[in-house]
Length: 307
Ligand SMILES: NC(=O)C1=CN([C@@H]2O[C@H](COP(=O)(O)OP(=O)(O)OC[C@H]3O[C@@H](n4cnc5c(N)ncnc54)[C@H](O)[C@@H]3O)[C@@H](O)[C@H]2O)C=CC1
Ligand SMILES: CC(C)(CO)C(=O)C(=O)O
Image 1 (cartoon, rainbow, N blue to C red):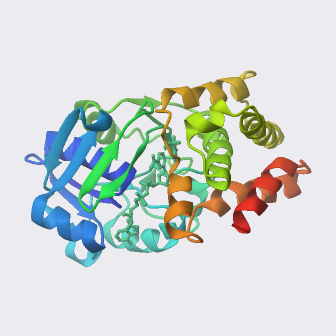
Image 2: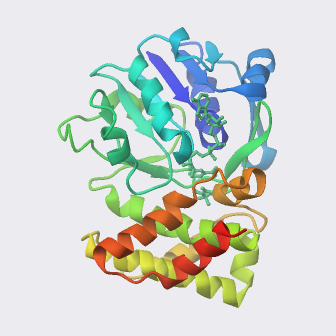
C-alpha cells in the first residue's frame, strides 16, 4: 500500500513513526513535512521519544517531502496538520487521492469532517479524535508523554457501508489502540470539551495541565467552560454522559503535571497563528446560533485575543 502521513508534527510524527517502524519495509510510506524538520528527517530519519523517552524509535520513510507532486495516489492518508493549515492541506491531498483513498484526519475539533467535505468530494473520510500528549522537540525529533494514545473513529456519513479494513489492520498491527465507534460524535464532542476548556485556560493563563488542576480558580473556570460545551452539545442532540464534565476534568490527571496543551504551545511560540478559532471562536458562534450563553468562554478567549 501507499501510505501518506500529511504533517508529521507532534501527532503525525508519533503515529508516522509507529507505522513506519512496523511497515516501512512492506509498504511505501511517505511523510509530508517542511523546513528544518523535513531536512533533518531526510538526513537522519524521524526520531520518536515515546513515553517520555522510555522507548526511542528512529525511522526513515520512503520519501519525506513538502511537495505532493513527488507522491503517487495514496491508499491511506493520515492528515495531521493544525486547523489553520487545514484548507491548504486539503487542496494538496486532493492531488494524491482518488475515490478509494481512505483519509483519517486526527485534528482536534467538532467540524473537521464537514470542513474537509466542503472542499473534497473524493476519498472516504473517517471522523475521529485522539488523546495523546506529543510535540516536535527539535527538528526531526518528536517527544511524546501522556494520554491514552487511543484513536476513536467512526464511519464516513457519505459512505456508511464502508468498513476501513485495511486502515484498522494497519493500526492494529502497528500496536496503535483504536475504537471503531458508531456514532463517533460522542467521543469527538467529549474530547472537544476536554481540549477546548483546558486548551483555552492553559493558553490564556500560561499554566500547565497540572497547574490548572492545582488552582481552585482555574479548575472552576475550566469546569465552567465545559458546562458551556455541554449545553451546546445538548442543543445539538449529542448525548454526552451525565458525568462528562467531572470525567473530563479528571482526564487531565492522566497527563504529566508539566504537560502543555498543543494550543498553549502555539500561543507561546507563534502568537497569533493558533487554533484559537477552533476552540473559542467556534464555541462562541455555536452559542449565538443555539441561544446558549458562553460568558466563561468569552472571558478567556478575549483575554487570549488581547495577549
Ligand atoms: N500535540 C498534541 O498533543 C495533540 C494535538 N492534537 C491536534 O492534532 C492536530 C495536529 O497537532 P500537532 O501534531 O500538535 O501539530 P504540529 O504543529 O506539531 O504538526 C503539524 C505539522 O504539519 C506541518 N504542515 C502543515 N501543513 C503542511 C504542508 N502543507 N506541507 C508540509 N507540512 C505541513 C507543519 O509544519 C507541522 O510540522 C491539531 O489539530 C491539534 O489540535 C490532538 C491531540 C493531541
Ligand atoms: C489531549 C491533549 C491535551 C494532549 O496534549 C491535546 O489534545 C492537545 O494538546 O491538543
